[in-house]
Amino acid sequence: MIIAVDGPTASGKGTIAKRLAAHFGVPHLDTGLLYRAVGRQVAINGGDPDNPADALAACAFPDELMQDEVLRSEETGGLASRVSIHPDVRKALFDRQRAFAEQPGGAVLDGRDIGTVIAPDADVKLFITASVQERARRRWLEMTGREIEIPLIEIERDIVNRDARDINRADAPLKAAPDALIIDTTEFDQNGAFELVLEAVTAALEKE
Ligand code: DC
Image 1 (cartoon, protein in one colour):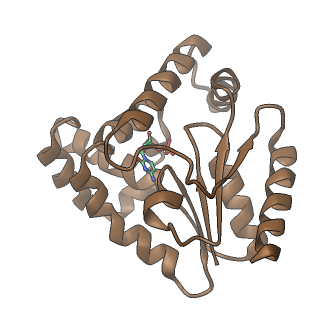
Image 2 (cartoon, helix red, strand yellow):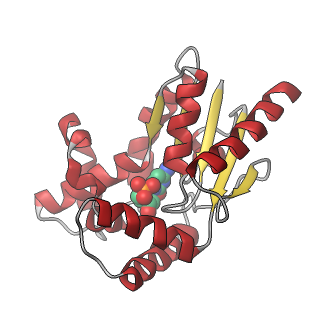
């Protein structure tokens, strides 16, 4: 069983994917972390994230980098969004994601193109979204909790820029698969959103 969870930044898709994986007892891959590791590695190499060759070279990042807390920063998220534009980077990360999706017993993957490119054969496809203002508020709360001070307006601006880049890129842009269940979590807290999702996923699996 493959569950694909896509959506824009700070939509809550990561938490939902993690909880779905725990619920169904299958492994979970946050594919954004792969792009974040590439973005971070470009910076370590002193390269330019907008240069396709520099970004491709950074795909050879060491596995330990995936555990580095710095991957969760806003700055690395911005770098990830920039390197993710390059088709060669997407190709270099494809096999790893596909192998994860194909493992016996199934998997949950979250990202931007799981339902459209990585696992178009997924049993259930979800597209999780929420308003820009609500996503900015959630990210701000999370960062304040980590004692990172950043004005809400700055986060909102970053989210708008990141959405634009992710939606408008030519290769594997952020978009819902035609057969995805679109779930707007703006009005829900984490538990409420998960209940909504679990109901939708259970109903979709029963229909199969
Ligand atoms: O989900 P995230 O914020 O960690 O993702 C960071 C960036 O990585 C995002 O702005 C675009 C890119 N990304 C992608 O292009 N495809 C994916 N499957 C996951 C992330």
